[in-house]
Length: 362
Image 1 (cartoon, rainbow, N blue to C red):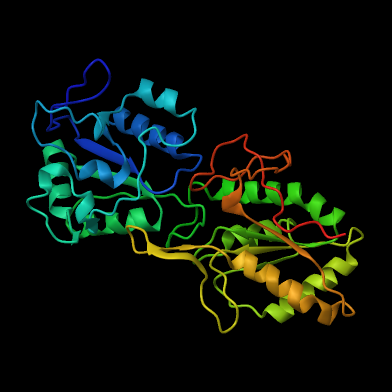
Image 2: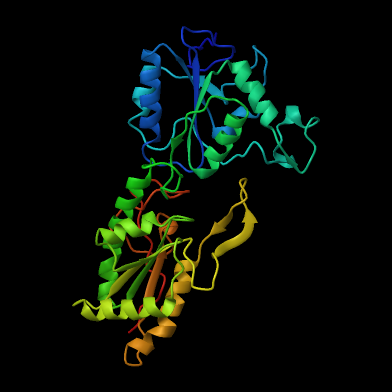
């Protein structure tokens, strides 16, 4: 049985309880709601007679466990108690920590020291080690909380006969077969908040306001704020759009607005008709994804280029920003008086929005 030390960490393995043991982990980006989700699972499981083991650092915590009873694996797992999760449930982020590790595609340079003689390829599948570690811990059921990438590896473990119950967590609300994802509602409300904070600058300079928001394959984070009135238009990954038609609509929206501005939300995965996704760089993460970004800038450039056609020959100056830029305050940026949205490195409340990146036009 796992026996906690005074600090709540564990060294022993093999759980033996009335009903078994549940392992829980968080993977990918952190969002509001992770700690409350861990709390809810833990409290119910404990009351039902299960023991709950928190697996630290996402899937990374399951690949470098030393399977020796006297070894300190406190950086990999800990016993969860009602007292512990009650405290953590009031905080943001994930107290179990997280990573974007994909155990089925581990680079040679990232192989744990104790496994370097066994796994020598440039890319290595450490699933056998994950399965051995789950067995060593005595985990009967595994609850991963994450998005498409985290849960894609959970599917792999399910195919290896691990009993998995997944909790979807993603800003984009793009986990197939789910109605609700932890983090999505906050993303929508923060997008609306951010748009409302920036519209005063757009109105002051009579511009188009172009905001690039999250959404690789699904456009919910652009569509729902637009439906709620935060923007005049949105473009989403599900439908390639005609930039000339979008320009015409935004010019008309701007003309009808007494403050002479209009707003468009651009999903990062949106595509022009005849075009493809736009990437910031060609390198990929552990799950093979390139980093999206730049579609908002491209839309801004095309709006400036095409707007004279629908605006009596006069160009309308766009102003653009990205949702992921919030919190990264450039030199000289003004405080717009709002919190940035959570995602990647930009999830902390109390940060300021960046200034619009297009210079003021006289």
